[in-house]
Image (cartoon, rainbow, N blue to C red; front, side, top):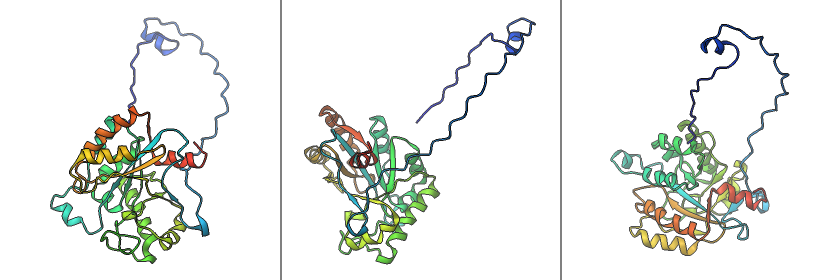
Amino acid sequence: MITLVRRATALCVLGAALAACGTSESPRAPRPAPSAPSAAPSKPSRPPTLAPGPAGLTPVFEHGPRTAGKTVALTFDADMTADQGPRAASGEHFDNPGLIATLRRLKVPATVFMTGRWAEEYPDAARSIGRDPRFEIANHSYSHYAYTDDCYGLPTVPRDRMRSDLERAYTSFRKAGVRNAMPYFRFPGGCYDEAAREELTAAGVTAVQWDVVSGDAFATDADAVARQVLDGVRPGSVVVMHCTRSAAPVTERVVRAIVPELRDRGYRFVKVSELIGTANGRA
C-alpha cells in the first residue's frame, strides 16, 4: 500500500509569502516559463497471455521457462462453490485473512485464483487483494463446478454454460470493487478436456495449471506440505495452494516455512503474469 506523506515546510519565498516573512515589498512577478508540450497519457499495458493452441483452443500454461532464472509463482485458489452459502452462514470460513497478512508481511507477490462466489461472500477481502499491487486476481469460475465429468465429485457445468460461468465470475469481481482481474483461468479441480478448452476460446483467457502440487488441501501436517513444495520447486515453477481456512488450515504455516528457505536457495517470488510474460519473451 502506498502512503502519501505531506511535509509542511515554512519557506520565505517570493510573492505572497514575503508578507508572511515580515516584508511589505512586493517583487515583480516572474514571467511564466513557456509550457512544455504535455506528453500523451500512456495506455496501460495488457497483461501477457499465451497464443491459442492447436485448432484455436484455449492455451494452457503450467510453468515458466526453466532457463530464465530462479523464479517461482505461489498461487492460491480461493474456492467456494455456488451451493456453500449455508455453510458460510453457519460459521465455516472459506477465507484466510491470516494467510494474506503473512504474504504481505513477507513481501511475497502472489496470484489468487478466485471464484465469483468467494468474491460475493467476502467482497471486502476481494477488493483489498485486488487493490494491492503485490497481488493479482485471476478467474477460478463462478461456481467451482467442474468443467468435465468425474472431477473429484464436483458438480458439473453443462458445456453450453461454461463460458457464462467464467464471465459471471468477472462480473462478481467488478461488483466487489476489483477492476483489474487478470485474463487467466484455472479450471475447478484442475480438470479440463478439449471440449472445455474449445468452449472458452472466445473468452480470450489463458488457462493456468501448475507443476508443483502442495498437497495443502485438507492437510494437517504443515511440515509435510512444506517438504513437498520444497522438493518440487524448479526454476519457473507454479505452485498451487489454497486460500480457504476450512479446507486448507495449515497453508499459512506452510508459507512461513517455505518462503525463507526458497529465498535462501536464490529464488525470487513473482506473479503468474511475469512467468507468462517471460514465456512470451516479454519480460
